[in-house]
Length: 91
Image (cartoon, rainbow, N blue to C red; front, side):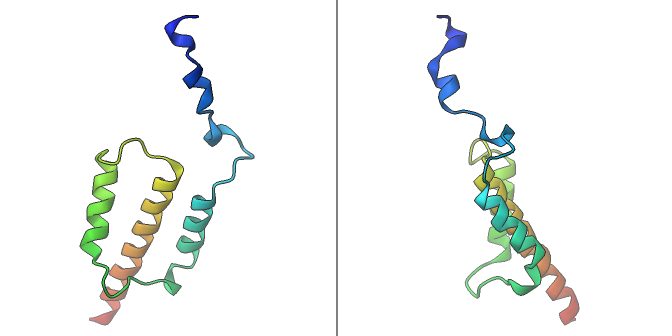
């Protein structure tokens, strides 16, 4: 057995390449993106915090991006876009 043939390589699997893989976080992100007009930021949620979170993910502060983290970023972006759109109509 060589260093390239470690059992850990097979243990993780590759669910993202399996078309039968379920992605519940991605499904939730799809729903939020499709119905974002029904969702709004909570009173204690700051849009700047969401922007900082997205920037941190994009800069690699959270390590490798998994499907759950990717879905969370999609939801945060949809919420920001909706919030910014609402602010534009208030003027």
